[in-house]
Length: 55
Image 1 (cartoon, rainbow, N blue to C red):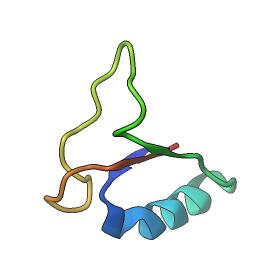
Image 2: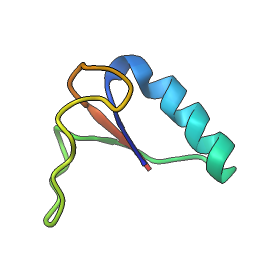
Image 3: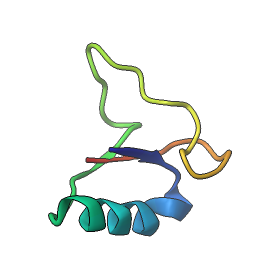
């Protein structure tokens, strides 16, 4: 699972496929709310705001 900015979507998808050998789901964090989890504010790969969740 990766919380990433717009710039790093492709890299996160590639990493997910390499690790799990399956296509991920990409969730827009601005349109989705989680009951028991708050996503990180910043991208895991840089300091930009996290916009997508790759799972």
